[in-house]
Amino acid sequence: MNAPSDRDLILLARRGEAGAFGELVTRYQTGVFNVCYRILHERGEAEDLAQEAFIRAYDRIATFDVEREFGPWIRRVAANLCLNHLESHKVTAELDEERDADSAELPEAVQEVRERSEQIRMALASLPAAYRIVVELRHYQEMSYDEIAAQLNIPLSDVKSHLFRARKLLAEKLHASD
Amino acid sequence: MHLTDEQLNEYLDEAVNERAQIEVHLSACGECAARLSTLRKLFNEMESLPELALTRDLAAPFMRSSGLPAQLPAWLPLTMALQAAAALIVFIAAAPFVIRLIPDIETPSLSTVLIQFQTQWTAWLDRLSQFHMPSLPAFSLELSGLYLMSALAVVSMLWLVGNGLLLRNQW
Ligand SMILES: [Zn+2]
Image 1 (cartoon, helix red, strand yellow):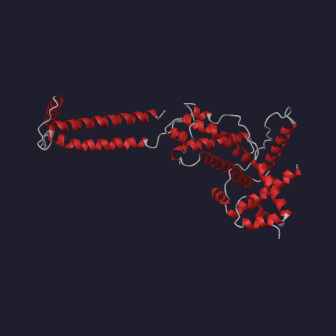
Image 2 (cartoon, rainbow over the protein chains, first blue to last red):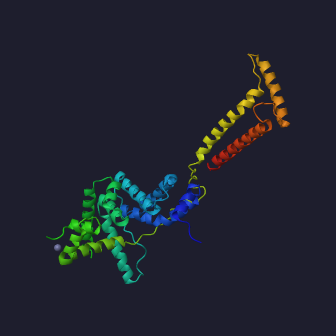
Image 3 (tube, each protein chain N blue to C red):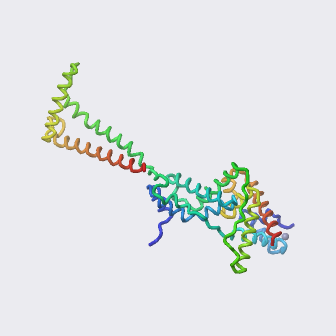
């Protein structure tokens, strides 16, 4: 038996079946959490805002256009929430030094990959928030310059300059730790 | 003239018009090709960043039956309008019967009205129980009575179903 499509689940959720929406959350929660984490770099906040994104989606499920893809849409909702959160809470929380698991007993090659991932995460975390959000939308949500400008309501020239400077900073940080 | 950083960035972002020109330069200039390859490596590294796992299940609040209130379907509030419309239609349809059943009363006293009303009411109930309506020359009587009864039955059903749905969805 085939699993129900996202569209089926949305239609069921509209009829009041909360469990159907729960299934949709199960499908996308890791992706959405990672959007929030890449922007916020704080696990607790990222999990809270990912949860909030799904609650908002649930509130709007009646008006959601079922012909749209749910995955990209919910990731954009999450990115927007995180952006608003950063703008309203200028105080930066201690950034997490996230480790996937206890890496002591892992093979050397795996440890190297983990260390590199951690370096990338730390480099991303060190970027100004305005750069981080543009990097998120371009690299992880694959939006075009025009789409990013529209989503963030900033000029196209800012999208480009934020993105190019962010990449320069990332390259410098990652080179320094190569 | 070498390619600018902007051109390389835009090239990888697939946001340049002069793609062919850039590719001509890249195929001839090792320096720019190397810069492009460094930038591409950065893109790949960022985009292959593994996803972290959640420490809690975000679906849990939606799975519990007592979690969030069930969403009212968009069409549900329409049942109220539908009920009102049906009631109005039946009211209009029933009006000729009612007008004929209640005789014209010329400024009578309250008691006369009540007595007359009661008389008419019992008479009406009587006829209704015999399924025999008073003579209405314009209509086929049996059919009109049946029609009135079915209309009443449909409205009652609509009312019950509509309210049942509304109540059920409050929980
Ligand atoms: Zn060159």
